Length: 209
Image 1 (spheres, one colour):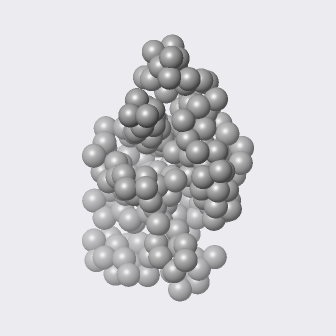
Image 2 (image 1 turned 45 degrees about the vertical axis):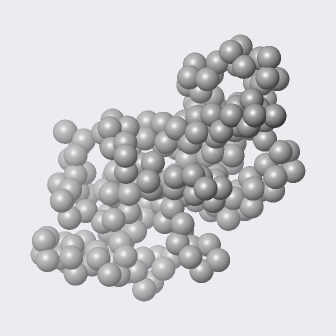
């Protein structure tokens, strides 16, 4: 369904640039979780006459998890995520397991304006000293475990509001990639949606041949 040479080129470039953020094990576990859902949403039997196989579904998922669709004329990761806030099931894992919790230098003043008591809870970021992070995490000190909600939700750091998307620098520009956690419902459904978009476009092209 997808040109093999183009597929491997795109996937390899994406994995190389994101290997720090997403381990190979995380990627594989998420792909398995997405596959279980995709085969129900897009039946292989229905398109068997077009030559669609199980391997095609796997390749589509492997491309969807590492490629932002705006690179090929589709919606960006952020555009898709913004349209589906309901995908978050408030499990609280991102609050309990993320470290460090990144705070951009330009948002520190905003955080302190609304939460002046945070001044002793913010320290220079270990990896990016010009930016900041919370002193305590895993779990985040501001996560209310009783109700799985944030105590400073309305003024939380941008990295928290954007999750499971993470902003990374590539070729001097910012890009939102998916934090590929198989146990994050938001991440799984985001990659599933991207996979369905890629699948439908591939089917359309097969029918037009």
